[in-house]
Length: 113
Ligand SMILES: C=C(O[C@@H]1C=C(C(=O)O)C=C[C@H]1O)C(=O)O
Image 1 (tube, rainbow, N blue to C red):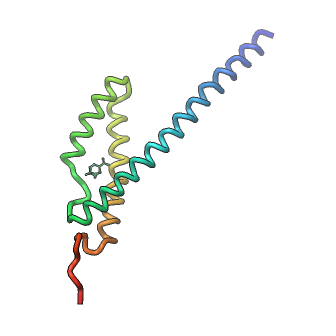
Image 2: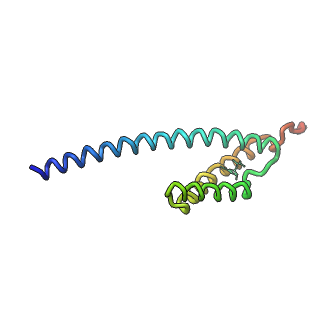
Image 3: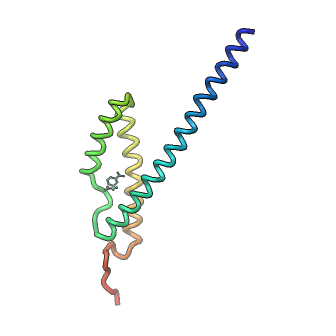
């Protein structure tokens, strides 16, 4: 039957799209892991030098840049901004944890006793 063939063709096309989606999701996970590996190192550097976990001026620059990139790529700029903010919030949480668990956040802490 034609309907059955149409359905079988649709399932084949769907499976092809899903294979690409799975590859893209894997790439996103690897890229996020690499980004967090880098931002954790930034957190250690900031804690060692007494720098604040968050840098709102830098974030504003990133938002403006990513909104433009999203626009050019036909991705919703509001979504791109929300996604960046979501990731940055988690980064700042890590930086706060690193600062709290490091020895006073100084590179060469004074002896305590
Ligand atoms: C990574 C940094 O720390 C924070 C996290 C940012 C990010 O995830 O891109 C950007 C600015 C900071 O609020 C940084 O200062 O570069």
